[in-house]
Length: 249
Image (cartoon, rainbow, N blue to C red; front, side, top):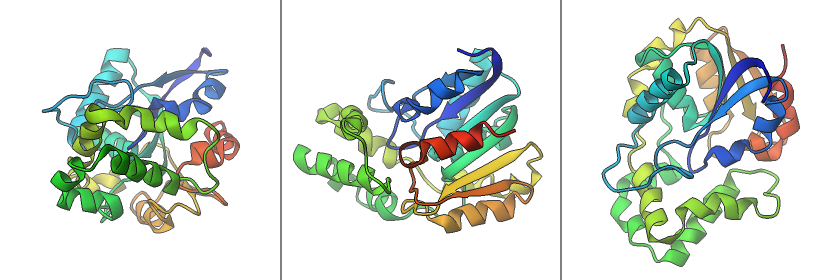
């Protein structure tokens, strides 16, 4: 691990810290890098009764930063990691040095597609046969990449969601992610004073470019950068371009 300033990498759904497997080692050449799995994701605990709302994730993230003794660290977030880090900053008193958000859930009307269907029909999805569930998750994951996964990567992303426990965990977390938890901080976005960088894949089909524009309008001083030929998963589609932005001074 490098000896430079700390940077915390925050994943979204339905991913895990595995998403940072190429980015974290490259950043660690010069910086102290911190990665983790949100509760209910990856290698973290999966069980009934967990609060997996964005509000809960934000509280957990703020406490994790305190546990690590990090104040003023750089924070890099993807997908719902954006909502988690924004809520922690604006409502939980978390302290960052700077914030990079790429292809993130942040606010507005983002309950769409699979999100909306699961919210409306959560019990139906929980009863899917295992083969249908796995096919659905695999298809959703493929939809997030513009160029496709390298060998073995899709299986790694699928692993936490396989089996009866994994299937239950998948719909448990999706059914608790709601716009109400981003609406509570939207009016505070223009009060963010720390440096903010927005990065977006032009071919993002999960959160298309208008979501970047929506966020940029509300954090006017933020830098906005586009990555051509890349989808929702910049870590998979354009890791070198992403790294160039993350290491730019």
